[in-house]
Length: 443
Image (cartoon, one colour):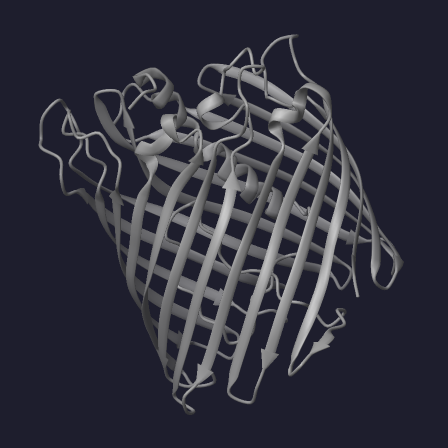
């Protein structure tokens, strides 16, 4: 590996920052709550970089007929003033104006026993002046298919390819003081295929579901520093669900996940190839009451299959994680959302290796002041701690946001918002502030 151990260590300890920011932005109300396509069953995420459910076009959207399918174009444009573009500490900070274009394209064909859904999600960010090296052009291209073989047997398939990037000032570039020598953000591709089989009528008490998913993550920008994080991934899983009542479902899921790092350095027996077994117990409360949402508890055991018990390197581990996403329907026009999620990732830090536990907590309140105008206030906090690496430095992040949304037409919204982002990681404390004005619309 051409990068130094310290540079790599810095990347490893902070590469979750960008992923956490993506999760926080989705949670903080920068868009509507994602609604998965009806009847489509997805495999669990392969990795924390992976995406879950996408937003299905709602009843408000109008389709353009394309043969037997419907085409739903939508998107948004935002102009944002950013103070401290690179999350720098002290007075030497770079400010920039960002123009962000977010296209959303959906092609859907629904039959009596099948659903086909293809989508494109883009995120194009351009910055003025010195911030031009932070320009990115991310996208996700995904396809889903659902088949009802009969009233008890169903099959779901998925395929996706994404190009995603990490913001400068996070991940490998955290703590840098001179960004003029950095040409571009660290960018990677994420590809995935999956197949799921379900037995049992969704309206019956019990249901068995299982399947597998395969994926590949590979860095394509600045890969000389990051190629050791390239990996092949797979998951084999099964779940039993039971409807306790008409609106409450309990489930138990078992999964076997495998990571194989294709360009890892094995000279110190620090291979990160990992096999993990996880048991998840969860409950889901359907919409319709004062409280609804879901919660889970997960117990995981993992083993680094290609490591030897030398150099104080961890060869196995276990932990318990919790999560919940609960909604409080205060009024028909006012909803509060409480969010808690924990997950485990593994890391190699110099001559030792350990697992990192990340905890995310947030609250969000969306209130409609009239039929046309609503506001969203949200707060999000994340923290990272290591279970078995004394050299790991904890990381904390706090994000506060306020957004107003005005519907000037059925198909057009005007947005105005502000966000404060406090990041304390790798012994660097910084604050970033954003003010934005935007338009979003659909047919």
